[in-house]
Each structure stands twice: as structure tokens, then as C-alpha cells.
Image 1 (tube, helix red, strand yellow):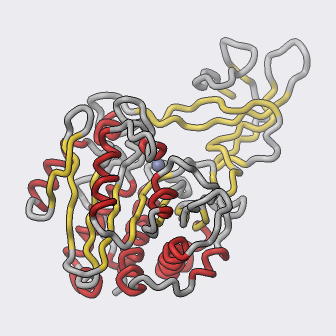
Image 2 (spheres, protein in one colour; image 1 turned 180 degrees about the horizontal axis):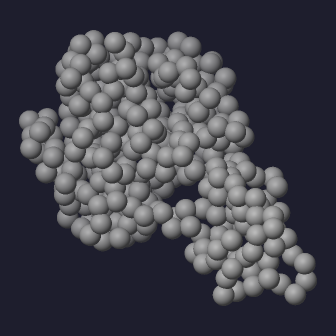
Length: 368
Ligand SMILES: [Zn+2]
């Protein structure tokens, strides 16, 4: 049995939203011996790191640096549950590597389901200024831990596809370390890991895998870790067909996390196969969540247009799941883009207090 066949979802965390308190309690109760507090957030929430394995090759990974990206936290929880049930899958990995996994680097943002931390700082653009308390913790650990690899675990918006048809459910990047996007020995090592991850993902899923843009960001984490000589793999979980809860994404993310660790344990610093990284298609910005096509407005001249909508993810205090609120993000001719859902409104009526849909506003109309 391979990992994909053995995959189990951690039953304690079925929702996309993860309450930090619930996570901390769960980790203390079930994995107390493996975790330690490595620091505190601005709002004084603990940040925990779990250490697994006894191997020579050291790996650092972190989840929810952006609070509204819970896939990687889920992936680590699912990985633990799956390996508990199928321990034979982990033996050859964790005697070769030691994994330090930081859960929820941004607990304040995670509680509010925001990208940024409590001071509205984007931690993934904070490498130079070090304005956020939380990012300093990661940087210090990464600089002093003699790591061989880093896994920078994120999620991306629903707008990306791999080929104009299939959503980019997982995208990977071996970040550039200079504006020239030079292919350095450090990048090649990260590329080799990505190539091995893709080989380990089920064949039918390959149409949903892409490569994230390697534009150089001088203040971001992966680019700077690579520059330091630490091969870093960026994971981006994305849209999965008809699945805004990202349950499918979560499953493939977990498999990819496992395959990444396995690849590192086998590659042992080699860059074997790195060239195939460039066979991956680049992310394409092709989609909106929903497009209403051919909507006739109530204007005094004949006006027919398309309305594109994106769901905003909102967390309301006290609830145990996020909500999806539709916003108008484009009006006019959306012929160049597609919608994951499209509704042809020919012959239907636009019902609204306004004569036309308002850009950047919550959807307040019906089409009947
Ligand atoms: Zn992110």
C-alpha cells in the first residue's frame, strides 16, 4: 500500500477553519512529547514546533505563516494520523531525516482568518525589516538549526489553472535567489525535490499540478532562504473542482508533504532529475469563481454584459467554519476569462436596487 492509498483525514479537524486553541489543546494532548513552544505571537499565543525523526538530514517546515491558509496545518495532522495507522510507510524516512515542523506560525492571523498578523504585517515580506515578532522566531531557528532543506507551506487563490481548464490544485516553486532567476546549485536541489514529489502524486492528478511564478521577491522568505544556501520548496494549495472547503486539496497536499519528505530522505542533497521541473506548466490566471454571462441591465439603453464574482472568505467570531461571501470583481466583457461556474443569463432579468452591478461590492442582485 502506498501513502495515497493509506491516506486518512484527521477526524478532529474536519473544517477548513482551525481554532488555534483547539489545535494547541490537541497537540498537547496527543503529541505532548514531540512539541515544544518556540515563542509567542504579538497577542501572546504560543507557537509550537514538533520534531520527528532521528536522521542526519535536517528539514524545517512551517504552516499558516498566512493565517487564512490552513491546508498545510491539516496536511501535517493528516500525515500524523496516516502514519500512525500505517507506520511501515515512515520507517525509511524518519531514520534518514529529522523534521522540525512549526504549526501555525501566525496564530493571531489564523484565529481571525487573515493573511497578515495582528499588526497587519505580511510575514512573507518581512525578511529584511523583521517587523513581525513571529517571523523573527522562524528566521532565528532557520539560521541556527543547520538545516538542509526548508518547506514553505502556503495556499493560493482560486484564479489559477494549469492549462486554462483544470484548476491548479497544487503549485510548487523553487524560488529564485536573484532578479536574473539564475538556476543555482541550491535551486536545483529544491527542483529535484519537486520533481520527485510529482512522480509520487497519482497520475490522474498530474493535470492539476503547476509551477508558481519564479519572479524574485527581495523581501520574501523562500527567496532569501535560497539565497542563504538553504534549498526551499514552496507549496501552494489551490482550488479543487467543486470544493471550496478544499477537502480534495487537503488530501493531495498531505500526499505531497509525505512525498517531499520521502524525496529528501532519498535524494540526500543530490539534484538528480532537476531538469524535469521545467516540464511543469506555469500557473495561468484564467478563472473567476463565477461568471454571469450576457446579463441585460435595467439601463435606459440596451446594455448586455458579463459579471464576474469571487468569493471572499470571512470568519465570524464564535463560528467553527468560514463563510464565503460573493463580491463583484469585474463587469463588462469577461470573454477572455472562464468561471469555475458559469451561468448564461440570456432572457433573464437583473433584479437589484441599482440599475447596474457595483464593482468591488458584495453581490446584492439576483438574476431570475
Ligand atoms: Zn501564503
